[in-house]
Image 1 (cartoon, helix red, strand yellow):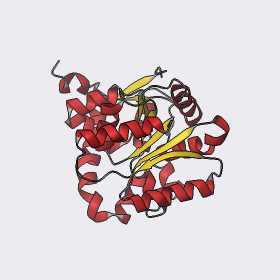
Image 2: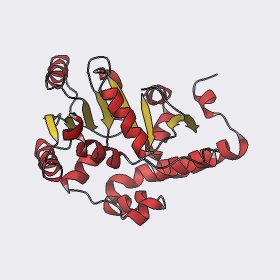
Image 3: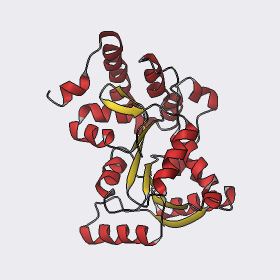
Image 4: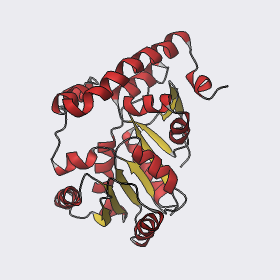
Length: 260
């Protein structure tokens, strides 16, 4: 899955793309029958990458990094990529699910807060996309898996013939998991974060108008203040501060965090 164009946002490399070409690239990679992973980038991921050189390298080595967050797409535009557009992970997930039957794509689901939630996700996807082919689903425990358990899961995903595996265990855990399993799995993995909760109906989408002006984070904060306020307080102001340094003063943070 060759990158067409990437731009560095603070320290994280993000592809300049749109929904249709991103889906096409994922389908092309899925047909190769080998491991690949896609990161769905937002402000949270960007600042996690800034804080951790190892995580930054992991993101920048992904086969595709899509600008899921509106601020990421706006940053790409400000850095001179006028064609940049927001590509929401939710939209990619639904596009791939909608084309599963026609394209003969086997879909897998890995994550969710419980198997009951994942069962609801599966049920809702089957209701919305009757032709979808879901050949694997598993909600892992919150504890770390031992080697034997991990090997069983890997084997079952491959045996199920999964082409596209949606991984929803949260950032940065899901990106670390995907990178660690790229060599063992024969599918494209896509980190979808809280997407399973949205599909299950346990969380609400922000109105489209809020998404379009980059205020989806505020809607989510109002819905889950206890869980999200620390994340947004820590990451959002720093993102603005560091990006302004990059944009206005050409600050190279990639060089700084890698000690070069």
